[in-house]
Length: 227
Ligand code: ADP
Ligand code: ADP
Image 1: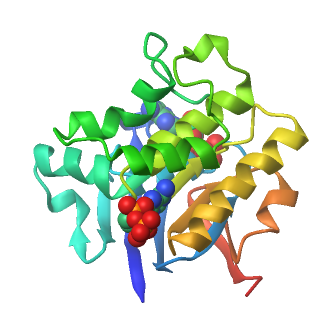
Image 2: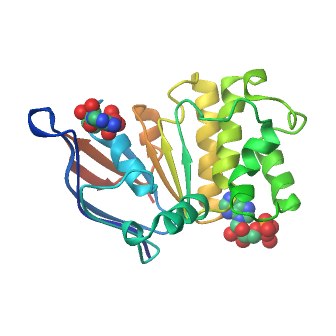
Image 3: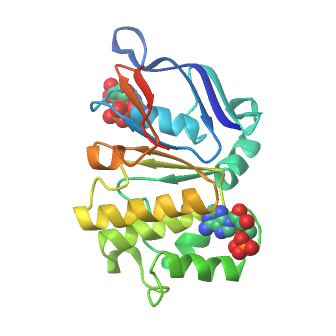
């Protein structure tokens, strides 16, 4: 079953002689539950693509469909709801809010949605992410690996259909990196959640079911490598 489709995406930044074409005619579709690694040199457009999929950066042209919905046909409020409920974004440098503790950071997307936190879900998540006992810690009282686990919690709390991770292990050592990947794979399997990871780490890319390579804003390889 198709969950996500992008059609002929382009993205340009700047104008005139300063114009940069970050994406140049990108088309692919993704099945529900698929685990994809996006690879490619620095500056090839990977982050731009991920941000467009996540509803945080508008394409210059082209379409993004998630679960049959035309993402950029939504108004600003609908788009904000899409970002909180349909997708979970994970960044290299965690992007946690420094003045909020672990619980507050994780539950932020629920509270911003004006909904009540499902405490059972929260407890299960804290358990899975090995954050029990850290509930009241601020980000600067946590290790990098712990901070990334908090950001995974924030991405998963609303049970999104798609998890988008931009170099999630780029700031971690190999042991912590593999822990993070195992957590993302667990959620991918358990909830048949689509997982798209941008990575420079070949070791991580090879754990995906499919690899999409991007160079100069274009897909140069799109290959199923596993199950
Ligand atoms: P990658 O993630 O593969 O390193 P990016 O998507 O970050 O690539 O960047 C693709 C191209 O778009 C690069 O040339 C980059 O400099 C440019 N770019 C990205 N974001 C911006 C921005 N906000 N303003 C101007 N240029 C940008
Ligand atoms: P159950 O334990 O019966 O699955 P939950 O309240 O934990 O009930 O979850 C309800 C639904 O929400 C699940 O069927 C699953 O699809 C989704 N879900 C729950 N937790 C997560 C999570 N951490 N990540 C993604 N989806 C989740």
